[in-house]
Image (cartoon, rainbow, N blue to C red; front, side, top):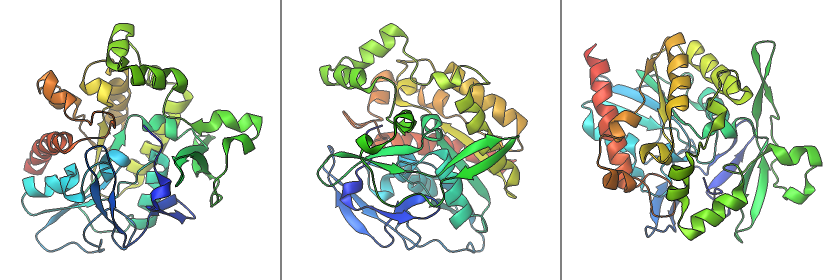
Length: 332
């Protein structure tokens, strides 16, 4: 995905997570669709209400963690699949802890910091499959106020003797330029994909979808092998998170847009998450098959023309599919 626009002053430094949204902020963010409204609660997450520890009597509460697809880049708070879910499920309250630009590692840290002891009925881990790149990175690219790319160091996990070890906490609060990095660190920058120069050239020419389909392009080779270092780290993070959580958990891999539009093959990605879910005490839901039931033209409308985040139509489709699945869980 494109660099996150830190220059909009949406984010505040956090010594454990790296950053969060600025608590109490209200802003209109420019966007290709005309702009969208952002409202941040007192905890530093996109919500029109503050999060409280105890849930209302007679209400089911769901906590959702994810990245910018869950946080809702490009749409108003009320247009996100989490907010729509409340309308589709009776007596249900959904707390959206999505944080733009983060990986599953930082989302796990946000859970520990803000939600671990919060009363709820279900925890949903909405893992955008692209996050497998972010968890192995030490730096992430953002844009400053002038639109220039800058780097921020991030917290990260390493695997050691079968256990997760947290590193780089607190991360340095100040950004750096890539030229300032040591030679060995330049490969630890998350750039949103392989060969960014070629990807950008193809996108500007409008050939991206055609190129992906004709070449059978696989955006995430990290999922091809069950023993790939990136997958083993993702697996370890999710395994620890789910096994240590005392309440029911739903693992939900959010598909990349090329999987939804069938310009690349999702089978390896689906296989990895399915294998993991089978090993763990959790519910599992992959929305890809339900999203692919929509006509191809409709599926293209699930993302913006240039920005690949979910449109209001995309959020609606995810909400409807997820609500139907949760109804089945409630019935059990």
